[in-house]
Image 1 (cartoon, rainbow, N blue to C red):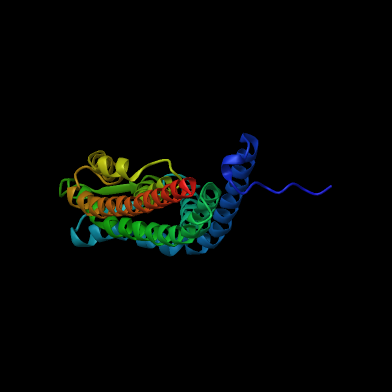
Image 2 (cartoon, rainbow, N blue to C red):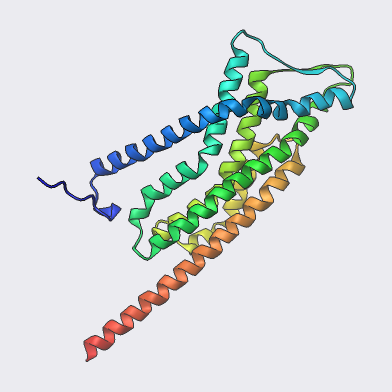
Length: 266
């Protein structure tokens, strides 16, 4: 008995088929991250040296005791595992971004599917750009926050707490840079209109400000502004793309309606 073909249009799939497809995509994502994490294990040491460099610079430049400590027997191993997993997420970004797009693409019309590759090509560099931005502002944030301590005090950080702070900062900014691409996706599948995106710009700025405030310490206003500006620009760029798409779709619908009316008159 021949197997039934999987429906090409996501809207025709049942709830069970949706869940099976989602589980399949998540399986690919998980496998890609694990394989990339294996490679990340061999890169963990130089990455940790780079992450901990700002703390060592405090000791050299300010002539004060500053160091990262391991408070348990397994903390060094746990630190390396955490770095390897985060590197796995970063290195596997092209794969899991593709899997996310592949899950939504069947909901698009055939012509709109041609844009999927362009969206993927935009999402991957934006994610890496966000990660690079987070990596760039990290030393400034560390120096700024530790600068509030009295001159005679020591800066003693645990490896777990410091690593958690650094990795969350870098990944949060990377994800934040990709969100405008998903906003365009929602517009293309008809969930959000360009009118809603444009008229919601005030709320978008508020959300971006809150996001950057959470990703960076509240005291570091400069880093917050540096992160918020490109995210705001990306939001308005996404709004412009959505507006062009809706305008093109409206013109196409008007032409089809005019053609239908002419045919009916004839």
